[in-house]
Image 1 (cartoon, rainbow, N blue to C red):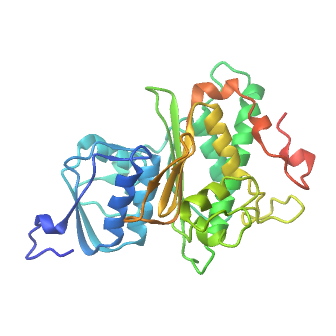
Image 2: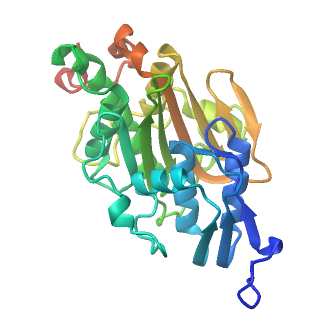
Image 3: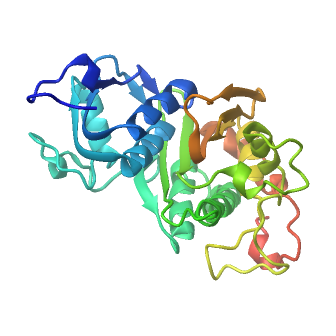
Length: 327
């Protein structure tokens, strides 16, 4: 992409789709593929851009981090979206002309319904999982704290497993520079929660290539295999929480079960495939594969108190009762 004599022409511009979200994964990953293929000065036209959710935020941020972009121009974005992106810390680390990013930030935040974009590093799985769980379930709001903890704590456990898995598996196959981004948002209009965990590592197929649960060596079958409990386990026979690199491999399985029980689903993208766990329908990403794993967790917050989340946890081999009991 080039800008001749400082003039932006249509050949120099990448157009935002109307939505960057779990609802339209094909458009999301195609847009990010265009960004990843660009270099130098990049112009993004947001004339038609109307909506972005946590999956869109995390995937776009990850793509911009990897792209060889010297300077980024975003034009025609609505004030509402600019304010939201600033609120969600999207511009963190960027120099934005004509805008006071610090002024637009909400330093107090809304921890009971939102986790701003954050890059997760080793040692942070437990802290970030705790924040994501709180944003998913909210404050007690008339309920006893014990009741709230009965489903917040197992959600936190599942998310910690999922984050630990992302941090360790993403860096396999020589992808030592891989990163993990997360974001979460509770939508008051319908009570839904959308939570994203996105890494730009090697993907499921590379890590499960020789696993006996992999029926076919394709990306969509690798996603299906990863949804089976303990397939992605990289912990020994004893439970230990001393590092983020160990886990029981039940995070993806359990979050999928929680989502399903709370009128939701997962959208999981890796390589050339994207799978919706509710419909078991896959979207082909052959023209815009995602190098890594991108997960969107979607549920209805109001349904969470009505289900027994601890009962959804798979039996964990070699576990110490005090470490996994949520009764």
